[in-house]
Image 1: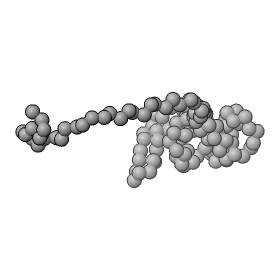
Image 2: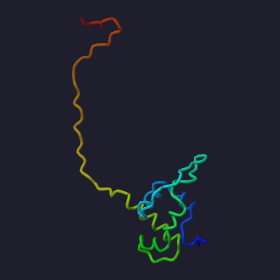
Image 3: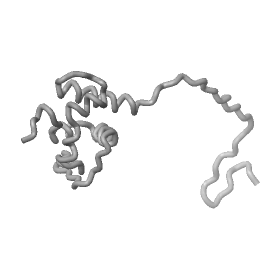
Image 4: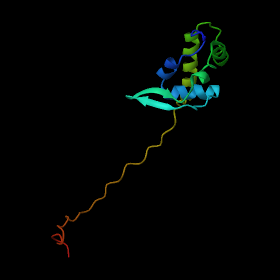
Length: 123
């Protein structure tokens, strides 16, 4: 029997945002080989099999995060934070060149004519 304190449950996996799940799957080299199923706007299966998630253990998370904790959820939260931080681009302040404002054009504009008729004042 799988010890729930050492392995990631499928319900916890599905509670993550899909982007985070795919980042973790990429980190572990997991492939979505199962069926993707959504029922009443709720993801029931995202294609990752329960057996595939068995590689996400305390030991593997210690390796990925560098933490020495024995608490599964501390390790898991650190893993989630690390994959989300890697994806966030660094915001750098750049010099933004402002475009010159459009110059006003002086002159007159002829009124629009109704269909089939010329506007007054035009030839």
